[in-house]
Amino acid sequence: MELILFKIIAKLNKFLLPSLSKRKLDLSKASKFELVIFGWKLFVTKKVINQ
Image (cartoon, rainbow, N blue to C red):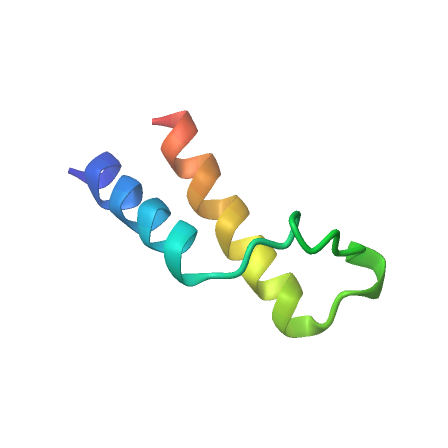
Protein backbone atom coordinates (compact mmCIF):
# COMPACT_ATOMS: atom_id res chain seq x y z
CA MET A 1 0.00 0.00 0.00
CA GLU A 2 2.77 2.43 0.95
CA LEU A 3 4.71 1.61 -2.23
CA ILE A 4 1.70 2.40 -4.40
CA LEU A 5 1.20 5.70 -2.59
CA PHE A 6 4.81 6.77 -3.11
CA LYS A 7 4.73 5.72 -6.77
CA ILE A 8 1.69 7.96 -7.29
CA ILE A 9 3.40 10.82 -5.48
CA ALA A 10 6.51 10.33 -7.64
CA LYS A 11 4.43 10.56 -10.83
CA LEU A 12 2.74 13.73 -9.56
CA ASN A 13 6.10 15.25 -8.65
CA LYS A 14 7.36 14.61 -12.17
CA PHE A 15 4.51 16.56 -13.73
CA LEU A 16 3.89 19.28 -11.13
CA LEU A 17 7.30 20.21 -9.74
CA PRO A 18 10.05 21.82 -11.83
CA SER A 19 13.01 19.78 -13.01
CA LEU A 20 16.07 21.20 -11.33
CA SER A 21 18.55 19.20 -13.38
CA LYS A 22 17.21 20.54 -16.69
CA ARG A 23 17.74 24.06 -15.38
CA LYS A 24 21.31 23.10 -14.39
CA LEU A 25 20.73 24.35 -10.88
CA ASP A 26 23.82 24.74 -8.70
CA LEU A 27 22.81 23.51 -5.24
CA SER A 28 25.27 25.84 -3.53
CA LYS A 29 23.44 28.82 -5.06
CA ALA A 30 19.89 27.47 -4.75
CA SER A 31 17.20 29.26 -2.78
CA LYS A 32 15.57 27.66 0.26
CA PHE A 33 12.46 26.85 -1.78
CA GLU A 34 14.52 25.05 -4.45
CA LEU A 35 16.33 23.08 -1.76
CA VAL A 36 12.99 22.02 -0.26
CA ILE A 37 11.79 20.82 -3.67
CA PHE A 38 15.06 18.95 -4.19
CA GLY A 39 14.83 17.32 -0.76
CA TRP A 40 11.21 16.31 -1.23
CA LYS A 41 11.91 14.71 -4.62
CA LEU A 42 14.95 12.91 -3.18
CA PHE A 43 12.90 11.60 -0.23
CA VAL A 44 10.11 10.26 -2.45
CA THR A 45 12.56 8.68 -4.91
CA LYS A 46 14.43 6.99 -2.07
CA LYS A 47 11.18 5.60 -0.62
CA VAL A 48 10.12 4.16 -3.99
CA ILE A 49 13.51 2.58 -4.68
CA ASN A 50 13.93 1.06 -1.21
CA GLN A 51 10.53 -0.61 -1.12
